[in-house]
Image (cartoon, rainbow, N blue to C red; front, side, top):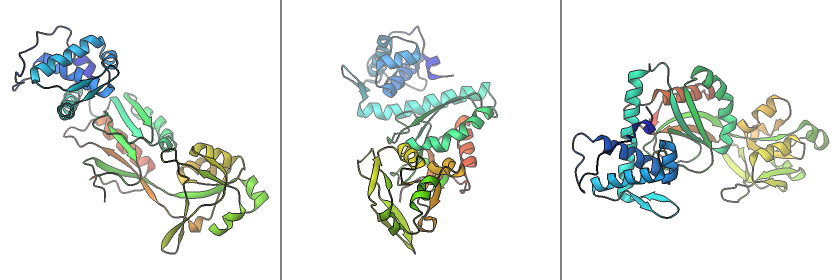
Length: 332
């Protein structure tokens, strides 16, 4: 059962302001919570109504009845957008968990856990498409009843508040109560095309890069050109090679490199298919070091959705080689 199916078309008049929910929330209270959650997620009564098959006015009135019953304002309204109040944010998290548990309870009654189903929302870095897309066809064959909704973006999302089931991230992460499982290690490679090497030769040490055309990447997040990092003995160092070309898109960096326009410094998983296909060759391998780990993170739950477990296990096993333990994540 989806939250859209929880709404009831015929509701009784609103209870007096301040009335307690008591031990058993009424059907009207439940439909009000569904309307509230959808409105908070989308930031719009119109979008919430579209998701629930109701008018924006009906959604707004349902939320108002819920606020009247609770005796507290849950949403701030403006002409353009709605947002959570402090009390609304606390109530939103509880409602999300309750509705998820209710949906899962019904799913367990009607469907075997051996056949996971339902919608799964995942957030991953922009470059994550290189990791995940090759895994999707097999996943779809194994779990045809799971609807994957993957948001490839470098924006840091709030898993609970924004309604994601899980996120895939790398690098240093903020303190969190999320569960985490490592997926794959990655590191940088310096690559060039066979045509480029035929005309310019291959560098044998980082210092040799001074005599080569280098294609640099500028972060679209902070606007800074990323340095090239290398390893020497037991420490790392960074250099800033002269850029003949600079792009703020890693796919553009890779395409220019394949075209023979210079050397590029990219994550190994980005260059993987081009290396395997012979379109690129890696150099300076003895000077490189694995630097990062991709992890999948998700909120703990007493009733973890089978579809989420299926996705976590599938991605981890296909990307893998890393320990399969799961931990409650705390940043160092």
